[in-house]
Length: 97
Image (cartoon, one colour):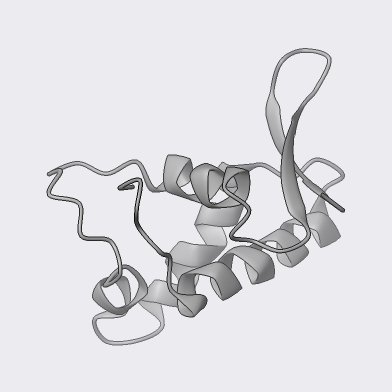
């Protein structure tokens, strides 16, 4: 994700919906768990991935979208979510930050 990138509301909403869905299943939510839900949303519509990521102008051939989710949370684009580490060092998504 480019430093000056502004994620779309579509992508940020998908992150929030993915967080809610993962939280209903598990106590610890990860960015990779959220990514699974973003993929499902993309697959439900024609050109879903293109529409979801039209805001990302990066020229990289391979993009780590799980890291993109983490960066959006780190940069404060996703209201109410933050990142934390468990005692074992695993990065998790937490509410209320």
